[in-house]
Image (cartoon, rainbow, N blue to C red):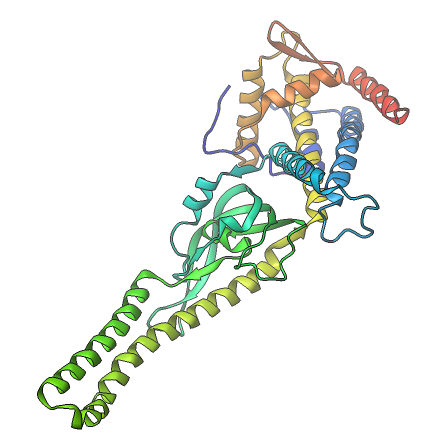
Length: 405
């Protein structure tokens, strides 16, 4: 089966839209459209798939709620019996492990520490770079989905009244989970007991560093050289003139010489102040711009992130099941298809008809079909159970969920 290193597993189409899309499918020969009765049957089957996937997630939802309750800064009410101090580290590790697993199932990509530093290296379009205190976090993880490009607007460096658009690499979604520990960058009021979750959209890759607390904007190297040069020049010039005065004129008129230094000192010091002030203005402008943009790019926080991501994961699994089952049911025939044949057909069809370039996660999809009993495998070839039998199988599964504890 094909694997595309430049494509993601995520299928960017709503499950409800996918059902309508498949009902309008006419097959590779354009002569195999679903009849009206078949469309009704398939839509009923799709609703059962939704229910089956959602039911399988109920236990995971309850587990996540219980695990996160002790670390949720917004919990109301708070747990009656929070974990004991010696238990918190174990529960914390379990929370991060469960969240990482959830992100993988939602087809997010985890950024390692080295990858984050590589992505965040350099300055933004405003010439601003950040310094992140990694030792301010007890645990921290960053995940993304959907690499693309966005646009940023900034002013011309000379003709300040003119604005131009710059294309920047972006992530469609960025999720952050972290627990803080005592650090001077975070201040005395920092919450060191909670675990914070944040979900953002359309974030420029270089701005990921702004999503973590404790970051400090660094002065560009050229500005540091200018400022350092101004200070060094001022001190050196003053020291030289004072030494020259003491050597040639004497102490008696030293005060007059000091007054004569006033003009050069002000000139050189003013240049240094201008460099420092320019950096402060750039920093404030950048911070304000990010604050304004993140107001609209912040999708959810803390417990809300958990439920939003669980919903995304459910939808993703529904899409995978529906795509894999539909094409097996309609076109695999009595011989069935191999995983590679199913994978290639789905990827080519979505690319041809919807211009969607994805790397379909066929192994996971086929495991779900076989496990649910709506597809069979023989000698590496898969066949779909007829849709009426598949519907009956899902109905049986639903009854089993209804009578389970």
